[in-house]
Length: 92
Image (cartoon, rainbow, N blue to C red; front, side, top):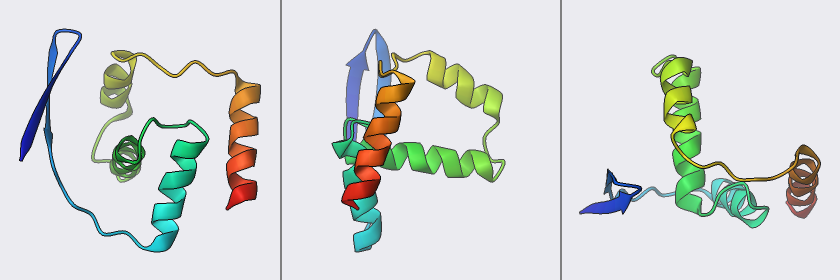
């Protein structure tokens, strides 16, 4: 299944993929969404895949930075982010 979204005059092609997760991974995704780090579990999973690919050297930091700067970022202060992370860790 291919889904096409139109965002700021850009076309984004998404494909549907099913991933079976253990409870720990599911809990981690839930926590990332609950504290507001990501708007959905899909976005959290995408970010994790990209981070892993970058760690393995499959994607260059420069290419990733160019893609990141094209999109609006979540507006949160460093102090609020720290509180959100601490809250997620205490709930886990």
